[in-house]
Amino acid sequence: MSYDFESRVNRAGTGSRKWNVMYDVNPDVAPGIPPFSVADMEYHTAPEIVEGLKEYINDAILGYSTPTNQMKQAVCKWMKTRHDWDVKPEWLLNSSGVVPALFASVTEFTKPDEGVILFTPVYRPFYMAVEENNRALVECPLVLSEGPHYDIDFDLFEKLAAEPKNTMVILCSPHNPSGRVWTKEELTRIAEIAVKHNLIVVADEIHHDLIMPGSSHSVFETLSDAVAARTITCTSPSKSFNLAGTQFSNIIVSNPELRERLEKRLQARETTSCNPISFKACELAYSKGGAWLDACIKAVDANQRLLLDFFTTKHPRVKLAPITGTYLQWLDFRDLGLTSEELNHLLQFEAQVFFTDGVFFGEAAQGFKRWNLAAPRVEIEEALDRLDVALTAHGF
Image (cartoon, rainbow, N blue to C red; front, side, top):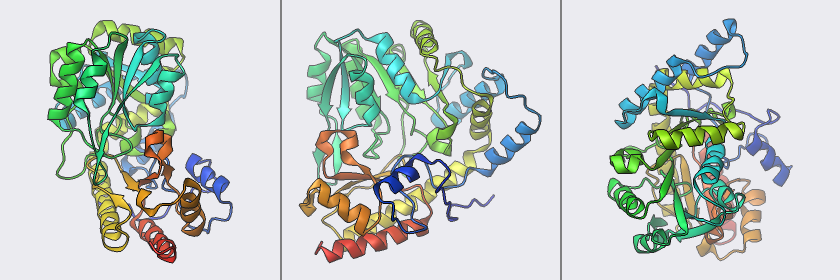
């Protein structure tokens, strides 16, 4: 089947969060301009999911529901065929999203004032899950080199993990915002340190299906039995299939003791009451959406190559590195020498391009922006044209 990743989707007035924020920032945005910020796609939903939901809704009674066996089997089959991961249906816990599961995991498996290690910069809710639960935020800053490219400071991680007060690490894999897929060797080193120092690991793998051609992702929990025994793996079809609005995730926990504790905590937070449409959308995505996802990845990869060529040849002072996972391009504008206010004005008012600000991922990311590449190519091209005019006008 041929899939459409080129048709524009006008989401103005539909309640889209990122479109609303764009108009809040600049009410005079020209017609036809989309935002490239929040991590949902500007692509139509996979037709297999749309048609499947239409058929389902004809006869469905939308009452209180629990996951069906068909959905559970679809998840397990997907994890086996896509990730070589043998997941059992009973390992699955459902949550209204990965973020509620992060909060619940921190609450359940750490005590007040204990330390939770984060590899920063990282997705803002990681910080929130720690700080709003009155735990100690322990940053293990990623080492930034030319690119921009990030590496893990394993010496520092070992030192932090050895401190008795630090009892958990939350891992973003693939990494958001940098689009970095950690190698199996890197994940193995994280695992060895976590096992050695008895850390609970919460692995947010919500982007693990979105791996660019030539790269490969390893599910953290599959590295060893010792690793699996201490890991909570957070997954969802939401990023892979543009289903974020269904508010649904699969939290996979093979250790029965950890699973029972987390399930009770999720229930106490009332985040397990997902709806029948979300269950069905998950089943359809994992059972029928593979070909669409493969085509989507190719479209995103083509978009990132467009950006790489543009900035390398026309505006090399804006730095970027190829993404190996996610559909999120990390851009380094620091060499332009602009203040935050000046940069935002250039982007949002002169070029009318709207990204996620780097400081959303931590103060160390001042001067960076994250560009969501899951959009029709023509919209990427038009944004680059506007950006070219604005940057050139300033002598960049």
